[in-house]
Amino acid sequence: MRTCLLLLTLLVVTSGRADAQPPRAGSVRGARFVERAERFLASGDLGSATSLFRRAIQADPAGSAGYLGLARVYVQRGVLVEARAVLEAGVRRVPRSLALELALVDLLVAQGDLESAALRLEEIVRARPRRADAWRRHGEVARRRGRFSVALGAYRVVVDLAARGEQVVPDDLEEARRFVAALELLLRDRDPVARCDGSSVRTALCGG
Image 1 (cartoon, rainbow, N blue to C red):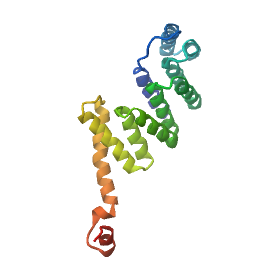
Image 2 (image 1 turned 180 degrees about the horizontal axis):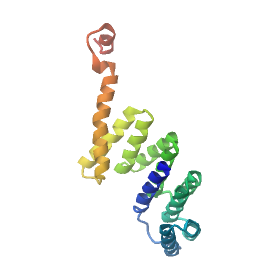
Image 3 (image 1 turned 120 degrees about the horizontal axis):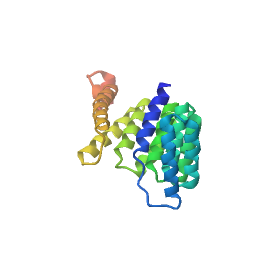
């Protein structure tokens, strides 16, 4: 239940950062369905919200809001498998939607599928190297998988982006700085070359 609540919060936040898109045929009609669905969702009528989010997707299959909303309903019901299927369909049909991509990553993490999340994040940061929110997630997933060097590199990118004036959420920057310091210490302590003390093995590893 705690995982579902956390994921629901993430999906709500992601929905609020919907990608800016040019007008499309059906987009106005789809937006109306989404608006009505949100009202039903807020009142706790999940059945009506589900139906209207589905109608939004049918009316505007190239818009991200319907997929994000329907996924939120399934998360609220605790059906993460269905939520994942909806987001995967959304990513296929709206390939340039970062909101959908990151929502899917967050869901994969909530399901414990860190390998799939890592693969998707690698693609995202290659395509969008200036997105600090994607790099922060990349660092988190790598750290949870024990890929500490990869995590350190990702967190360093977040710090560097902030230094260059790119938009970085303050909490993301604070987290990145904290883990850069911790991971640098961890990796230094694990590196035998960095811990040379004159013993024969470590001297050899140090090249001396």
